Image (cartoon, rainbow, N blue to C red; front, side):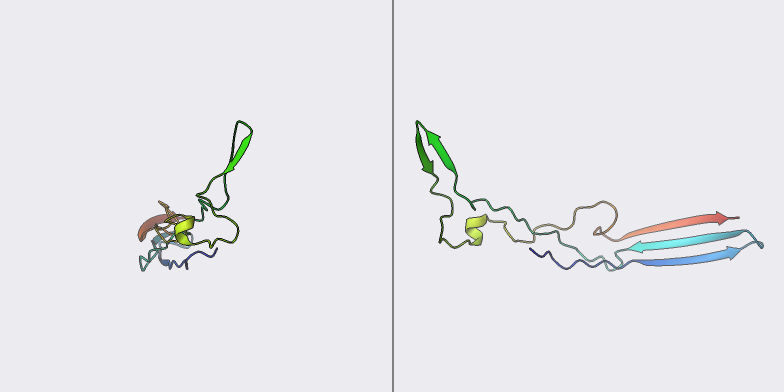
Length: 110
């Protein structure tokens, strides 16, 4: 199953201020997910009723009637209400797929 298109554009600004031949101060701004694009997670792929269940009671085997039998169409309602639906975004606090984040850094190099 293919997931949705994932896109994230990042942008970095960097400026160095020289103090001497060997020392400088570097200011850096990093913006992740510049356009704040929602990236959706892969759809659920759980097949609820894909195979029949077999139960044994007193030497008698029974096959559940709620399962899909050979020759029956496999529809979304048969698979479960959420099969193949985009219902959530990528769940991460940091990194790829998160909301727009801005990070500043100041570094002294010598």
